[in-house]
Amino acid sequence: MTPAPLVIHTPKGLFCPDGDFHIDPMGRVPRALITHGHSDHAARGMGTYLCTHQALPVIRHRLGKMVAEGIAYGEARQIGGVRVSFHPAGHVPGSAQIRIERAGEVWVASGDYKTAPDALCEPFEPVRCHTFLTETTFGLPIFHWQPEVVVMRQIAAWWQANAARGVASVLLAYSFGKAQRLMAGLAGLGPICTHPVVEAVTEVLRRQGYTLPPTTALSGTPPPQGALVIATPNAMASDWALTLGPHQVAAASGWMALAARRKGVGAAFVLSDHADWAGLTAAVAATQAERVYTLHGFTHPFAAWLRAQGLSAQALS
Amino acid sequence: MMRFAALVAQGAPQPQAFAAYQAKVGADEGAAALRLLCGQRPKRLAPPVTLLDWVATATNTPAFLIEACLKTCPDKAELAALLFPPPPKASTTTLTEALASLTSAAAYLALVHTLPPEARTIFNRLAGGTFRTQLAPAPTGPQTAGRCLAILTFVDPSGPEATFALPHGNTLVPLTRLRLTLPQTPALLAWARAHVADRFGPLRQVPPTQVFELAFDGITPNARRKSGIDLVGGRVTSWAQDVQACDVPPLSALLAQQT
Image 1 (tube, chains in turn blue, red):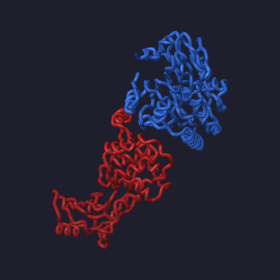
Image 2 (cartoon, rainbow over the protein chains, first blue to last red):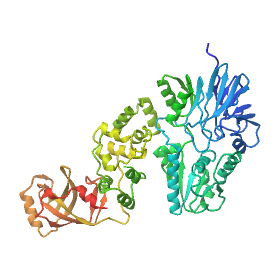
Image 3 (spheres, rainbow over the protein chains, first blue to last red):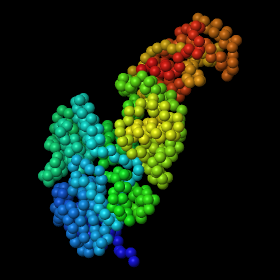
Image 4 (tube, rainbow over the protein chains, first blue to last red):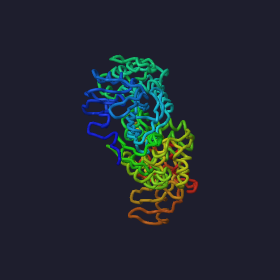
């Protein structure tokens, strides 16, 4: 008889019946295990939260009052009938894959992950398991990332060319993760300014001990000559953008690999916090999982590809 | 090829951008680029769907994944570019070298994956015959004035007007149709009457043996012309009876000098 699944897909998110907890739930639940602090994974309203020590400060900063507990990477904890541990996912600071074990059977929920290292976050660690629940945000063979240093060099060249013309360089990035990864990768090349929302998250990470270069929050003052300004796309749609003076705008995202997504931005850099096609396939292979469930993004083609490779694979969303 | 791809990345390049590009590349590449941007497309190697098939085979990408990719990236030239991983080292391939590889599937596949992705897409458009980018017409009006030699191909005695053409490969490409105002026009019409090769309404086709010197105020791209250009302010300045038709410089020479 097949044992009952360790994790099931429910309308509120992934649920572990034996441990009576949800992973990254989007509806109110009593007990939530959170892989990382992005808003599509860490939502308000849960009874209790459990996440890595490194992820907790940003989650508190964003969600406010909450009952939450931190756990070290690799630390095992018994929750109900299962043993649970968190392992680096390489996505953003503090991000984790969640390993669940019951009587020798191991399932891993990947959360969002990136296999290639970067200048900021804890590097991805593959975790062996029988069943792997993998994200597939970029699960098509058209997504191939360059090493981070190559992309940072491209961004630096764009920044320097703008600075030489006396124009500020505005980089659009998500306020947690990508923004700090950019400043870490571009440290020492010139003055870096931020939108206040970006600055607040950056300050939280700085206090945690992440090594980040000095930055200046801009609130109504123009950036200094030759500055790089890191801002969210929302900020550029607000009155705040009017104080920037002459500037060029660039986006840094994995989606910039597609010409259709590059339209409308001055410059585009292909830089993602998710695994590319090769990263996803390598991660699946490294788990040695016999069964794979896919969620987020290109779930169906990626599952079909895994089946063609002889694995048992199924799209969950 | 990378510089050319960068030049056309945002669509029709402005003449200043083209001049800056031309200053960086060799004369051959500059001339090749100008021909492309004036609508002179290379002979297509294969339709985009065939290029995509070749790339799918070369990258071991099954058909169901190609179908899924097309939903996200419907442009086959771009998809065929993105299926390869990034090249392991920086490419130094020139536009002329890239164009020279449009001879076979093997030559195409040997080159395409060595280019960076944006250059691959442009290369695929050239290979697939879907490259459409043209120089943006200069807003200040025509560019460089000049004179050229051209071969008489048709005469319309009712104008009187004449059509002139330039050699391009083994054929003649119509360049312009101009009013005949030379003092020798009666003699020319008499010659044409005596040498009619074919008739199309009022048009008399004549053997391509007579060479004329034309002057013009500028050249502007026009994709609807076989030559890819319009002569602005063209007029016939002389009947160059001392020049043989085989000595008339080809269309590419006219395009190359217009920068």
